[in-house]
Image (cartoon, rainbow, N blue to C red):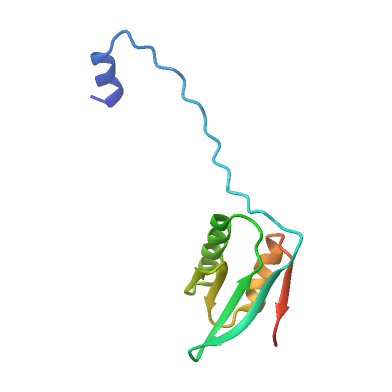
Length: 109
């Protein structure tokens, strides 16, 4: 006996309402006019790529950090309004961000 049949047996007078279709649209990131800064740094002897200068919501920037890490398949973090990616991936990150519609400025080297 299915769940619907069980509910009909318990509540015979209930008329089910048609379920509203919920549109599952992907979250749109805020695309700003000023370019994002993509730079290279060494911290504690390790090479890092740092992205900063996002003007939108913090949650959107965190979501962008997650997307970049998944795209590259590398580790990283989000601290002090900066995305820190382990390794030197400036070229790949800049190409990815340009495909998403962001302006990117390369700083250093």
